[in-house]
Structure formats: C-alpha cells, structure tokens
Image (cartoon, rainbow, N blue to C red; front, side, top):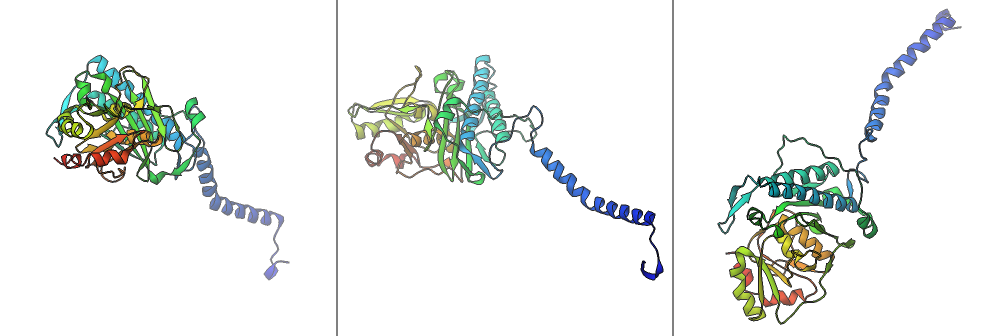
Length: 356
C-alpha cells in the first residue's frame, strides 16, 4: 500500500523507472562521450605514426637523437638543392660585431623550415632555438615515423628526461659566407640537445659529402677522436676572418712551427679535431675562436667533444651554458686528447682579444 492510499500500477512503476534512467543518461552521457573521445584521440589515426615514447612531460633522448640526425640530413638536402640549383637569393641580414656583413640565403631558410617542423612535430613540448625564424603562418606538419637507425639502437639505450629541462639548438646552415662563395667543404647543418644547460647530444652533418657525425654524452657515438697530435708542430684551426688575430699569439705560445689553419664554420672546425672519414676534411689539434659567437654555432660540437672525452670552454676555462641568451661572449678553445687546462694557461692574452 502506497502512502495516502495511492496504489502504483505496474505501468506507473515502468514509467517511473524509465524517467529515472533518462535522468541518469542525461547526467553521465557527456562524461562517457568525453572519455570515448579522449580514447580515440589517444590512438593514432590510420596511417599516422605513434607519438614519441613517454608522457607529454618527458622525452626519450634516444628518440630525440634519432630525430635530430634525421632533421640535420633533411635540412642538408635543402642546403644542397639550393646551392646546386644556384638559386641562393642572397641578401644581407645585418652586421656582425666586427662589422662584417651577415648573409642570408634560401638555403638557410628552407633548411631551417624543414628542421624546425620535423623536430616540433615529434617533440612539441621541447623548447627549440634556431638561428633563423619560421613564419608563424606556416602550418606545415611533418610526421616522424618513429624509426630509429640501427647504429643508434645498438649504441644508445632509452633515457627519459623532463621535457622542461631540454633545449634544442638548431643551426640550419653553418658557414653561410662560405656557402655563398661555393666553398662547400665548410658547410654543415647541426642539431644540439642540451639538458639543464649542458650539451648532451650533438649532430653535425656535411650536406655535400653526406657525412654525419653524432654523439651522446654517456651514451655512444659514430665518430672517434684522433689518437695523437704533434706537440712540436701543433695545428690550430681558426675562423678565416680571425686568423690574423690568433696567429701571432699562437706562435708565441706554441712556437714558430705552429700551423695556423683558417677555415669556415664552427661545425667544420670541431670535425677537424676528430677522426673523420671525409677526404675534404682538414685535421687540427686545437680549435680557437677569439670573438663573440652564437650558441647554435657551437652547441653540437661541444656535445660531440664532451661525449668523446674532449673539452670546449671559454678562453678562461669556463663551461658554456646553453640556456639563457643565445650568445657566448668569451671566445672558446676546444681540444681532445690534450691537457685542456694547460692549453688555457698558455693562452692568457686571447681572452682580452675576444672582447675587441
């Protein structure tokens, strides 16, 4: 017997239950639809690659190395295509601190576009610093198929780090001046990965010889250091534009038999310190730069040297941090298989030169 003497018929009970179910459906259908949409968005669409391993808050350095190698090669393809087609569209983009004209070409821009899109699509949570800018209206998406080259698989173990600790430095065309002069051997494309300001992954690619050097600190590399150098006739590699500034001090320090090698491109100069299978690569024992230099020029080389037990520091021996500003004010000295501290102590006058 219902209250007040009211009887509920079977039909009334059915209607009551249906109304209750309707209310519950209305309350929870949005939640269920949201969960279903999240599930669908979490799965790759047919024909699209999976996202990078790990959560959005972490990145795998082995995967980032693989993408960095691919980005350097893809950028190099653009650099080579523009140069061989002789469609540089060369223009000035400003002056260096020494008053030299900085050049910009289609090779710089197209390489930068290809490299940035690839890295940003693969690792959208990672900060990327590049020498050139990508047009914000350019919405091209480049997918990475998540393939990792066999030599990287064999030598490098997966290692996750927080995405916020990572900064990627891109040089889409190192040695632009030499590029415009058709001095192709000096040209490289480079990618560097820094973790908490320390360079840990370096990739240096030579587009015109298809040679690529890569290394990861505490991981492995596909390149080796040269095993020896000649102390009696050391070879010092320097920028073509700064050879005169370095030569006199270098000869006073190392002796009159010191060989000065003028060269273009920071990437090329670091490779000169290594055992590189490229007939167009000169060899040197020490790399010295005596003026201001941008971090995307030197970060990849710094990482490669660190991975192989070498050093790249300021002229006073300080480590270079790859956070904050994009420039290094204090010059640099780089070496491998040498007493780096002793080298710095031999060069007291070069630090003063770097500020001129």
